Length: 157
Image (cartoon, rainbow, N blue to C red; front, side, top):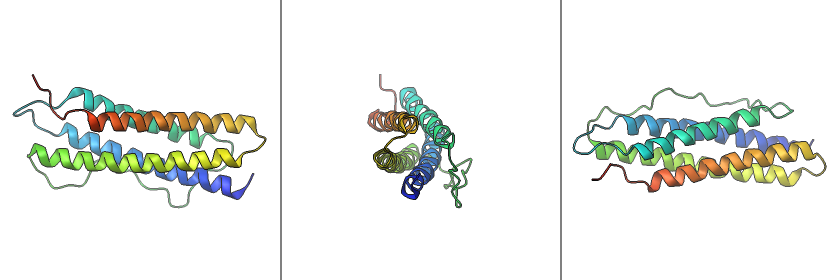
């Protein structure tokens, strides 16, 4: 197995961990919104939760690959975002959208590195299938990210 292949997969793993962190932070920020004057959109919340689930599934699939995916500087996932305590919904929406945009960037980077790893595999069909499956999960996560960003922030009438 080439070192380029392992490097691409380790990099995709690191970006996936970062995308999980950003998506989870966006979900936490969005859930902190008050219901005044309008309640937050539950469909957007569900999309964000789906993103976290898809990215976690991709993370676990990458970790299950038949070689060492340990990255010496694995990022630590913070439980809650570090932001100033505010009650203004628009500020929370901006922060949440910023985190989702960062998660989208990291997910795109993960997809690109997995695609490069697929191109580096020549004869190992089992590993090729596993990487293709991981790519499909990441594409689902990207689609949920885009759908969540495009959803309105509040329930309107």
